[in-house]
Amino acid sequence: MTDENSERITTTPRPGDFAVVDTGTRPLLLIRLGMWLSRGGYTMFDHAVICSRVSRGTIYIVEAKQSGAQENVWHYDDHDYLWSTGLVKTSRKAGKAALAYVDKPFSWLDYAVIALQALHLWVPGLRHYMRSTRHLTGSQLVDRAQLDAGVRLFADGRGRGYVRPSDLADLILDIGEMPAPDAARPSSADGKASRLS
Image (cartoon, rainbow, N blue to C red; front, side):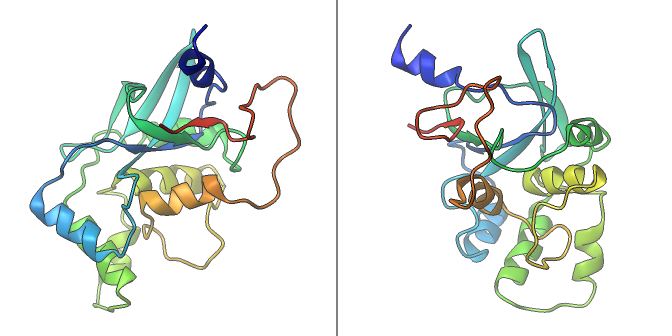
């Protein structure tokens, strides 16, 4: 077994676990502008997904798409990514909750509103817009599915919907107290169940 294969099998996500991904793609100009204005919220990771189920070793994820969120087989092995497995408290129910958001789209406006929040600019109606589940970026979908399952990922008082992939990555990379090792779940040598190139 090669080191790369060994590294990739260090953990299997559970339903409700989430990942941040560097897709290596270039989004539309208005979305890029919103990302840039959000002050570093998309520095390395530009996408977030949630594990909806694992069936016979195949990992299924729900991910946001501009045309509407979709459930897909995990297809990011050739990209840099981090899984929350064993590092961030999640709920198995969140994987099922994420399926309720399939077909919900997102637009450049979602990124613009997150940017306005990051710039501390207040505009009437933004809070109501961000609380809506009619449109969700990937990181918003992850956060909302966890909330639906009774897990609040962020304790910093942020409003619903104000979450970027980097915010989720910060949760995964937090150097706080690590959970006790679980003999049933393999982990990498550094205690992080993830892959980075």
